[in-house]
Each structure stands twice: as C-alpha cells, then as structure tokens.
Image (cartoon, one colour):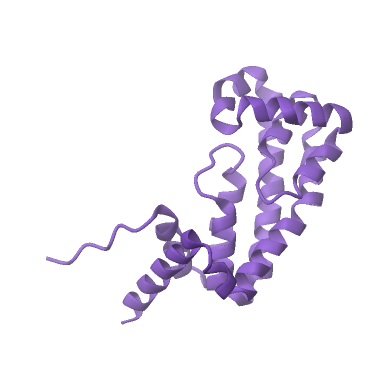
Length: 194
C-alpha cells in the first residue's frame, strides 16, 4: 500500500500543483483563474499565491504579474456586468459573502465623490477592490470603465509583490506563513524528483 501524501496546507497544495504545471501551456490561464474569481469567490489569498509562484519561478515573475493584472481587470468587468445585468438582488444574495457591508458603505462614499477614479485608487492597494467594483456597478458606471480603472491601478501593487517574491526569497521567509508554504512546496518538488 502506497503512503498517502502529507495533507499540508490548502495554499501549499495549490502551489504544488501550479509548480508542477509551470512549464505547460495552460499554466498562466490556470493561474489567471484565481485573480479572476477573487471578486466573487475569495478562495485563496492571491497575494500569497502571487508571491509564492514568483519565488518558485523567479524568471517568470513579469508574465505572472501581467496575468494577475489582466485577470483582475477581466474579473472586475465580469462582476460589474453581472451586477448591472441581474440587478441589486444578486448583490443582496451573494454580497455578504463577497464584501463586508461596512466596507460597501465606506466604498460607496468614496465612489460617490470620485467615481471610477476611486476604483483606480483602491486598486493600488495589495488586495482586490471588491467593494469598490460592486458599488461602481450599482452606481451605473459602465463595466468597461470599471475594468479600465482596475487595469490602471493594479499593475503597481501586483508588480511589487511579484518582484518581491522573485528577488527577495530570504526576506519572504520571515513571514512564517509564506515560509511554511514555500518549504512544503519545495519538499514535495524534491520528493517528486527523487
């Protein structure tokens, strides 16, 4: 009877699968699923995934960053289109799982004052601007305008996180969580190569 693989963390299992597929054609599209779906179903901390993949494959950090930025803008477009097409009942149904109501109120005030520019500013933060995208969609701002605002704001934080993952693995290891996940993935990689 074969030994079962160690359970590990969810992030470690995801990174291990992505690491094994890193040289396949479908790697970047598979990676894009995470930031694309982060607006509707936050499954995995995308910052951890971005930095982890960049640390494991430092030569590809630019293409990984470009994938995250493009997928994030596409996700914003799709969510805004869905909210505007389905109406507010969709937000009432899935809204509490996607964004905190207090966060929606705060983003609402910011968006009311600054419009789609608020999304571009909030997209400069390391995390996905879910609440701002939802509020902009409810305010009737065109989905393409929301996507362009996300596309304008996301490159800086995504590139910084990806570059940090690729160039500073020792610095990243100071984070216990990231160190544990990277150690798990490298151990599985070494076990597969043996």
